[in-house]
Amino acid sequence: LSDTSNHFLNELPGTVAVITSDGRMIVGTLKGFDQTINLILDESHERVFSSSQGVEQVVLGLYIVRGDNVAVIGEIDEETDSALDLGNIRAEPLNSVVH
Image 1: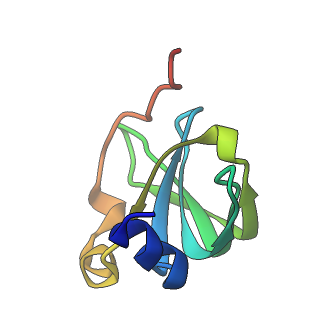
Image 2 (image 1 turned 180 degrees about the vertical axis):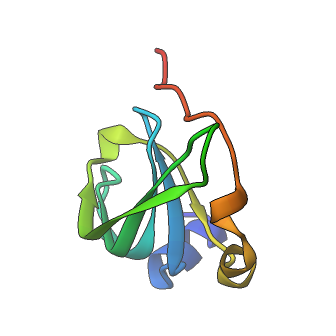
């Protein structure tokens, strides 16, 4: 494994954003994953984007995302994220992944 992979395996990054293949954005604390990239997220919520109103956050709590549904996963900078005014962000919802 590469140094980056070893680091990721030894130290889970904390808060992550997951974009699913159906276009959902789920943010939560990464608690674990397996070889098929099934993810365990704690204290998670879905961010629902709208072009007419702010971002709605739907509380999910402890949540499992199947690996075959993960399109993108990335670490969240918690300081930057907490400074965002989600109520004033307008955006079109993401489309599903097309294969």
